Every structure is written in C-alpha cells, then in structure tokens.
Image 1 (cartoon, one colour):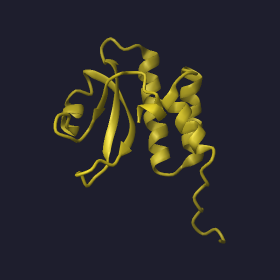
Image 2 (image 1 turned 45 degrees about the vertical axis):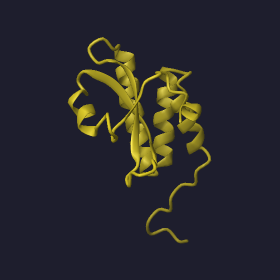
Image 3 (image 1 turned 60 degrees about the horizontal axis):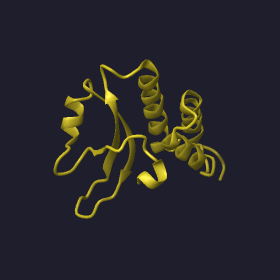
Length: 124
C-alpha cells in the first residue's frame, strides 16, 4: 500500500484489527491528526480495513496540515462514492496546498482515467 500511496508517515494505522480499533481512532481524533487513506481486504476479515496515516499530534499540527486533511477526506469521500469530477477537484486542491502529496497525486491520477457513472434518467 505504501508503494502506491507513498504515505508521508512511517506509521499507518488500521481502523479494524487486533490492536487499533475504529473506536480508538474516534477517541483520539482530537489528540491525533491522521488521514484516511484507503480500504484494503485482509484475509480472515469480512469487511475491508481502513488504513489511516498518522501525521501529527492534533494540538501541534499546523493549520495547513489540518486543511490538507479536511480537503483530502472530503475528496476521498467523493472518490469512494464514485463522484470522480468532485474527487478530482478535491485532490487537485490538496495538491495546490502540497504539490508533493503522493496520496493525492495517486488518487488524482486515478480519477482521470475512471469513467463517470451514468446520470439517472440518461439514455443508455
């Protein structure tokens, strides 16, 4: 996963698993600044596991990092809901904040090759 997303941090957390639970991330969201990266399938677990990148302590993180995470999460939500144009715009905004942000570059490049979903009511 790190090969494709080139996460900035050496620490990637999973929301589900034996050590890091989703509840632990929720409890620490005001303590830790992290961003959701992707969901992966893991042998022996029925639901995809959300990977998160630990960026900083929330109270010491700069405004730019907090904005980057906020915009990235919104773009990722659009991506996961197959709203490619909105996702592409969001990842482009993150890239304008931090041009070397590998996860945003990965998703931005991915959205450019994905077909737009059909609009309901449109002739097929």
